[in-house]
Amino acid sequence: MSTRSRRAADAAIEVIAEQGLRGLTHRAVDTRAGLPPGSTSSCFRTRRALLEGVLERMLELDEQPLTRLPPDAWSTRERATATIVGLLEHWLGAARTRTRARMQLYLDAGDGALLRAELDAAGQGFVRMAADGMRAAGVPDAGYAARMLVAQLDGVLFDALARPWPEADGGAWLRHAAETIMRGVPSTGQ
Image (cartoon, rainbow, N blue to C red; front, side):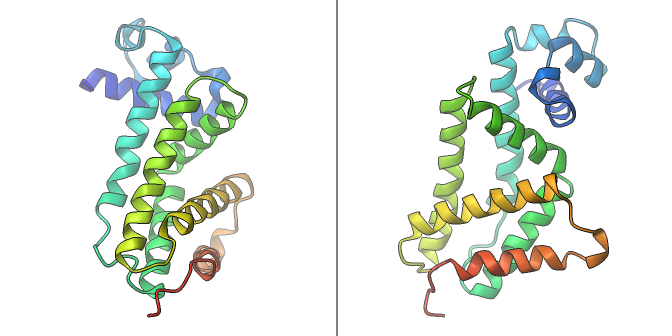
């Protein structure tokens, strides 16, 4: 992806997060990105192309913290809990705008809109990454456990975006959410 395309995709993510998919236009992205009029449409000719660019950029950015996880991230319940807390803090902190945009895309795709197949493939990719980590840690039925983990993480993220918890608790609710999620993951015997 070129620098200009990346800039347009990043701006499109912000537009989707703030205005939903109804607010996503090439012109709105140009304005948000500070690009000359017509720049976004020269990078992404159609709305579908723009959405595909957004998804490609989101995947690129969302995979980064996952690929940097230490090999022992799932080796014990305590490490796995700390991993989940760290990921939730990232997705609700530095990556909050992207998380909101991702939720918007999934909600829109549920209506049979554009990108259903692409979003399904992306979701399966994240489940595979989680399953690989769990399998390496000896979690029984890692594929199923990973699918449930991703579903629960998405539920926590959606809840945090829809009904934010008070900042005053110092993130204790994230720790509690991670511990609750981990209670549903089969034990590795460690």
